[in-house]
Structure formats: structure tokens, C-alpha cells
Length: 622
Image (cartoon, rainbow, N blue to C red):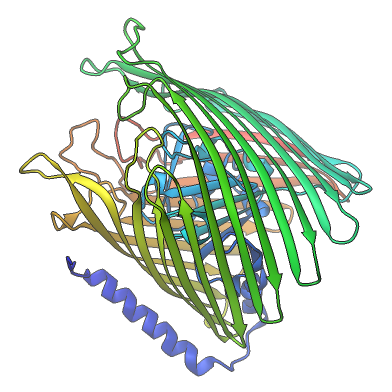
């Protein structure tokens, strides 16, 4: 076994953790101030992403973050990518302005290690295991639940974590809606209409919109439209039937390199169709059954052409078609001190492609059936909660996978919570690659969440992720060899209660990622991530100033195009004002300034960071 020296920085945060415990323990019985208590109301907020059934965050040992629709609206966000860019522990890399292709990483894991779902439908492609978070419109999101670290014991291939998007539920009124329109530099435009309501037992939520921009940065464009629909029907007694349908199409220019040695422009067309149909029914007071069927269709057309003469490069276009048919079922039993979830998933996947990113000239046509069964149990005894889980998967394209997990939470007081979690997870390679061993991880976390200091909420998590099942190239022999990486890290978040309607938030993530074979840092694995936020909201006027920095730690000897440029912070300002409001009706104006100081945060100069640009808009609720 290879041992890696723990950096001094890591020791410092262990000391901080011990100091926080030392401060918290004598105050176990101390009364909370009224202002501080509000920060911990979220402990009783329900999260379903860790164990696939809602339970309080105070009983959730995983490092979990929740973003609400109100927070999303305050950011004037266009897509899920805009939301994730502000979350501690997450790194995003985009290829343009709003709606551009975006990669999302959790705690420096690779983007294809992260499972992204909307309404229980995975967005990850079969060909690259890539989830295009830039094509999920922000307006349809009720909340985003993020599990950082392996979640395979519940979801299967989720080595790096889970981003679970829960869409809006129908309004209880007969009809209501929102019309939004914004316009900005680079011909950027985002227009949408939402309708929502309920007639007797039938509820509906409908949304359609357009999102586009041009030359942000120069020559990079997006032209997209999307439609989403959700219908619900409340069954007599306790139960519900629901169905969802989501369609989107985008034309993008992702890459433009006007150099003699490249002379390259990459255009991409993407189309998706997602559908789901589910039923939830109470069998007894304690037992609930849920069944979900889902379908996904994805089509992609990628063309690399010469800028000078428009000719298509050899091997292009890459045309891919994917179809997935899936079903899930689970039983949830709720006892006085117990939450037991048992279920299974099945998926039939079809991939047809004229080539892949690994081999653009190799045609692929592959079909596979995957299934898995899972079980997790949360037992609560006083202030102590223990969660144990396990899942068995048969992915067919690689060996069977077994993913166990164990977590503990302990509430020291009304203002302090301790967490501990360890789990094994895995991630599959592209379906285009035959019988490739899965990547595996063993993740461990310990953390504390406290508001023992008045007016201040703090959350500290230490984590260790050991990953294997991949290869790296030996610099001496030029041969690929099995390797292993160990990522040691810390995530620290802080937030104040509002004072004069103003609050401050900050987050810092440090990850030291080492490769075992070379006993050196892994280049391209982000090392430092900083998030800053200043918020003001008096229910009429609101403002959010955010700053973010990612030290991508790329190989500076890789050449000019593949060197990164990531000094300083990217600052964004989002403003909003409610001019008229009467009951459910309102008129709002909003404005955003992006990258106010023309900063750069790109791991590769071939994908430049969009410069400063502004936009404004109006939102009408009725």
C-alpha cells in the first residue's frame, strides 16, 4: 500500500475541528439566541437524495447541500450551471455564456463521476457519462439537493456524488403563472412562460422558453429552446400519480481557435427528450410503495470544421443516438425510530454512434441491460442516528459491483451536529468501450455543523477519497499502467444571520490529490475553491454579490492552449426589485452584471472565460 504524507494544511483544519468541538461541548445546554435559532430550522428540512426517501438533514450523515427556488431566483440564474457555480465544493467549467456546455465536478472528482438527475431521470450520457447541466432551465427547479462524495449505495454509479434536481409542483390555485423576459449584451436573451394550477385532484405545471447568446466570448454562441410539463393526480386516501415530459434542443459553437496550427471551430447540435410516469401509494400507515418508469432519448451531432475554408475535419461529424428505458420500485417503511428503504432499478440502454471522443473513426452500436437492488436503514435513538446501506449492481459491461455505506449523526445540542460517513462507490466508463473495469472509490468524511457563535452558522467537513480502476501513462516507458489516487481535503462554509436584511456567506474547499505511481500531485484536479457572497433582501429590493475562484492546478508545461488562466476571482452582481405586488400578482425588474472585472477562471486557454457582460429583464407573476 502506498502512503501519502498528509499536508500541513490538513493538520491545521483538524485542529480547527477539535477547537470547534471544545467550544461546543461546554455549551451543550446553552440557550440559543432567537437570531441564531433560525439558522438551524433547516435541520428539520427534508432531503431525499442520500437514501431515496425524505428524512431530516439532522439524520443525514452525508455532506449534503440544498439550494431552494428562492435562492436560485435571487441569482437571476438561467440554467442549473449558473446555480452550481455558486456552491461550495463544486467546480464548474463552461464554454460560453448562459446555456453553454458546462462540466460539473464535486470535490475535484471528474465530471463523469457525478450523477445528475431531474425528476429521477439520469441526464448522464451513455457515450461519455457526461451530464449537460447547461441545458437544465433554472426556472423549473424547486430545489437542488447535492450529495458530495460517493452515493453508490443508493443510486449505483455515483462515484463523485449526486446532483438531484426536484422540479416545481403545481400551484394550489386554479391557475397562476410567470412570464419572464431578459435581454443583454451579445444578443443574449432568455424568455419563458410558466403556467401552474390545480383543478380538483388534477395538478399541472407547464413551462416553455428560449435561451440564446452570441459572441460571449467572441465567436462562441448558443441558441436553444426547451419545454417542460408535469401532471399530478391525487389518489383517494394518500397517494399520487404523476408524469413529466421534458424536451430541449440547442445549437452551439463550443470552440473557436483561429490559429495557424489549429484553425478550428466546433459546432454541436443537441436534442433530448425525457419522460417519466410514477405512482406513490400508502399501503399502510407505515408502509409506502413507489414505482417509476422513465425514458430518455438523446441525439448529438458534433462537427469540427476549418475556420478558413469551412471544410470538415477527418472523422467528423460524430453523430450519436441514445435511448434508455428504465424502471424503479421501492418500499419505504417508517417506524417510530426507523426508516427502512428497499428497492431496485432496471435500465435498458442503446447507443449508436459514428465515433467517440476516444476514437472518432470507430462506429459503435451497443445495447445492454443493467439492474441493481438496494437497501438502507436509518435508526434513531435520542440524539444519535445511524444509517447503513448497501447496493448490488449488475452492469453487464463490467464486473458486478457491491457498494456499502455507513453513516452516523449526533446532535450535541440544539446548535451543534456531528457527522461521520464512509462508503464505497463506483462509476462506469463509456458504453462505447467494451468490458472495461469500473472505477471505484472509498470515501470517508467527518464533519461538524454549528451555530454556537451567535449570528453565525459554520459547517466543516474533512474528507478522504481513494480511487482506483484507471490507468496513467508511465513517463519512462510510455505505457499505460493501473494507478490509484488519494484525495485529502477540507470543506468549510460560513454564513451569518441577516442583520439589517444583509447577510454574508463564504466557502472554501482544499483538495490535495496525489497519484500513487508517481507519488505526485494530479494535474488538472482543482486544489483550491473559494466562494464568497454578500446578500441583501428586504422583500422589495434584493441584491447578491458573488465571487468565486478555482485553482485548477493544470499542467503549465502543456503548451499555451492547454495552460490555464485562473488568477483572482470572478465577481457577479445580481439585482432585483418588486415594483408592484398584490396578493399573488407582482411586477419585478432584475439586472445582472457578469464577470465585473474581466477575470479569467479557465483550466484551458482554448476555452476562454466570458468577459464582462450585462443583462436586464422583467418578471410578471399572475
